[in-house]
Image (cartoon, rainbow, N blue to C red; front, side, top):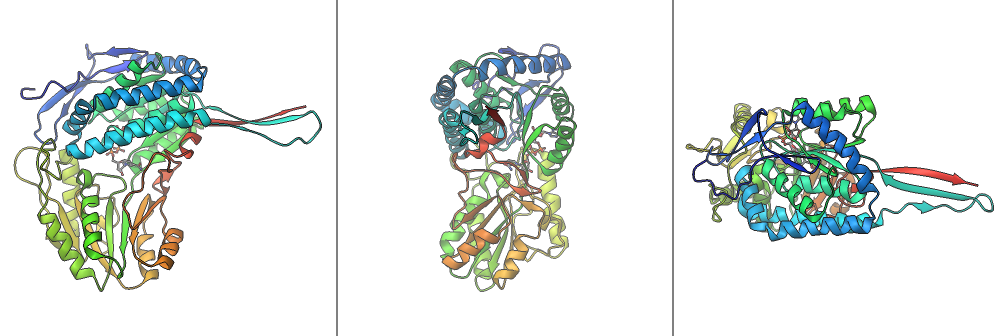
Length: 481
Ligand code: NAD
């Protein structure tokens, strides 16, 4: 681990208020994807660890749900403050393990702390309601209560943001939470849980475990302890986990993959749309669930759009994520890089034009050149499978109905974007695009007060917004005469 700044924390499990080191547990190495350097050794939870975490989560639920919302709110806000104070370390660690450029990790920390603060405030307003009487002297109440221990499984690509959304919703609603964050990026979740602990979250309210996901996740879900699962990850894993949840009717929030279309009409300011498009596409090397992936550009602008897009991509700086000068870092691991390359080569075989990129960067780390493909047939795999990498697919269209059909033709429905100056079109786009989040003349589709989630095979339920609490609360009707 030579050369690693010592800001990277020891990798530990957090069970029943205790930080647990590797000891004689199995483990895995966590790598810096830019260098292949070992950052740390992550212990895997044993079955006994998981049983302890589950029991602790039940105990923690009783304590936390019984605490006044005002007090819970104070603790969550304090945790957000601690993370901000430690911002330099927290963002460097997130970048070191995820490969995300440091400027984007800073934005993500802002987003994560805002989410915790928002849930802290909104947790004081999870009101029920009183219905009008049906009979003199009677009372009819709709009561909302925390659902119980919540299981949360998160991916690596937003190592701060995803744990913050899940912990914020569960804790804000009064639930305890067993978090299994991504094994690729464990330290970011560790730093967040440390902040929660130091802010005053009682033992058992948050447990953090790692291990072999295909073993740990089903074990937690089949325990009979958890009442809800909030999952962010790929569609196939989401479907598998839902089947397990069905065994015990565990409530699910599924934040899954997407394949976001971007519709560019003939009345836009082309240079402005190009600037926004290239920045949005290569954020986190395209490894973002709402990443714009399929650009559909009106035929009158198509050639200029492809040219302008490619020219901008050729000016991008690719390199170490901690170097402020770079726009894009490495991909998360060799597997992801190989998967993206396979999709790109398949598209070329199917007749797509490679405008730039299309190969790995030689040398250490998992770098891949930012890539632009155009004229891609729908039969190519990349037009049907989530690319989740630094590749833009650009095709042309002639008219409105045709492009709506193209945008909606996949089973995904996470995000969709469109650019036009026409008010009439904007109205129709909002109504007709099949996606849980729609950005019109903007790629910005996430703030703590707005619901974040997909439709179709991109999942169900929302995080953030008042909707974010729905997953973590039950509704009871009480009729009293
Ligand atoms: P992934 O599905 O491989 O992993 C997500 C989580 O599931 C991790 O905690 C992982 O350890 C766990 N997991 C992996 N295999 C498992 C198994 N067999 N059984 C149980 N759990 C398992 O996804 P990833 O590669 O980490 O992340 C990329 C995916 O996540 C993409 O599809 C992306 O679109 C999606 N994503 C969605 C959102 C959203 O909000 N909709 C946000 C970020 C990422």
